[in-house]
Length: 592
Image 1: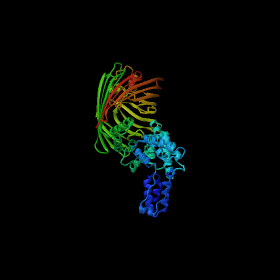
Image 2: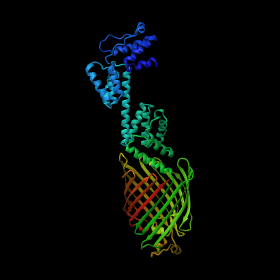
Image 3: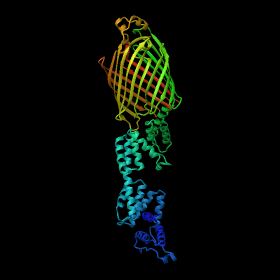
Image 4: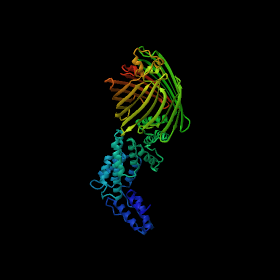
């Protein structure tokens, strides 16, 4: 230990240690240190006893007599109380001593009293005491500096607490502003760097947060102890598409102790999503649609299996059954159709992919399709795709399903966040529709949906979202001849309707715009409920239409989920465009 170190720690040493050091430095003939230590010993002698003088050579020959300090026993007692964390007792004894022996004069144990208040959690009282010590010449420079450092640390910690409180209240921008200011005044301080990274993550700036979090996690400061930024690290890794690393980070975070119930809930939810994104899966669903045109049951099944890191293969099938009501324009009263496809997917860098399928079923035509796009593994990212499908199912109306309607379709899709708060999805398509080898016509259309969360509970158990939706499509029906009508089983009485039969199955023009509100809430940790209500203006019928829907999603575990739903639309489709539609659905998805 250097002379400077000894001088810096001098106020913390006991009288015994000071005397021993005086004797040591006397032997080394270091008069500067002997005088400094002697002055400290005399400063601690407030009773008026003769000043202590550093020992002479003769003292060493016959031994020296250390002057008695009346507070040696008290210092030992105080050290015992502080080491035993009996802070309240230490405070009481220090306050008693201060009133009894130091009334009106500087209290030599003021730093100890400030420390005791600070350790006991009485920070405001401790702050006042440290302020009285910092810059006060009655105390050694080392104690003044220690008090000043405590005050600076206290001010920083209060700002850190304020930032975390803002995060807890979902005031993410305010938290980030505080963290940014702290980072400027405390450069390189790990606790501040971690706060800043967590605030970046909360504001959706995962690309900036990730390198900071990874650097901090590797910092020696956090080695051998839990890293409190594991969940923010996991979320940032998800946003970067590094799902395996995110899964590991969630696991490390959930293994920590002292987590709040909300932290556990959010982390389990995130870990489950990552698991499902990585897992193979199979799903089955069934939907019942009832309207004036008839009743339709549509059932589907799809499964995917990972062959390698880049290659997935899958299967998909559909089964549709319709029971038509009287009043239709075709001679069929019921029909069943089945389809099946083999699927292939190849993964490219940065969540891009290529996908293709081939299959067949009802009818003689081969079903083929291809798609290129990018996955959306995190809400902060965008997804998009461009696809082409030949002989895809055309399900605009139940009568079209009954005659095995199919379409060739090209479509572009995109979805993502704009300005960090607006969820946007859009698609545009062109199509050519046929049935039984008869061309019914061509069309195009698209949809735009913009929504925003307007209210979210602090615990995120209840979310309210409002949105705007525009839906437009146009279909130009081909003129059919008598042979075409006979092949399709046309039995209507109006020849004009027969010549443009496609308009019976598919609305010539559909243009609807309006607003909706979505409500979602966690009933339990496993059960999620949602409801939707929308009011739209139909520009073709020049009237208002409304839609209502609700459902339940139940997670049995991270490996299985069941969804039940129902919906009511005041306007139908195709031949039933003037009637209401009632829909019920059930779906099961399994991950393995």
